Length: 120
Image 1: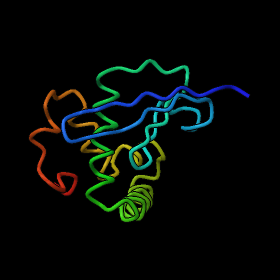
Image 2: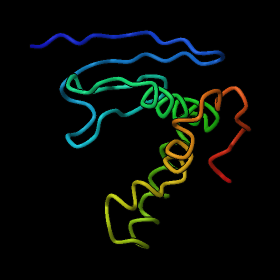
Image 3: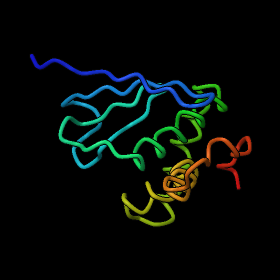
């Protein structure tokens, strides 16, 4: 069994843990955030853009009180899939992903981010 490596990451008003492993996320994805844990495939190069993108998701999880995040994400994905009939386009247009992709290269975004920014 392979060992996993875990990095604690501290950001102003944001704590998260990065776990490197071979299982999560599914193949084809680099990272997935579940609550305050970011699971990264061992073959993935961790960049500031990746950290920023996943940090936005950590903030989204918190403001949706964790359980609501899953519900909203799932419903948003199904809605987008019905509209676009393409798995990748549906994923990229989930309300949470739109915010994360739009601001993943914006330095200091989390310090100025408004609550529930994913609704805009």
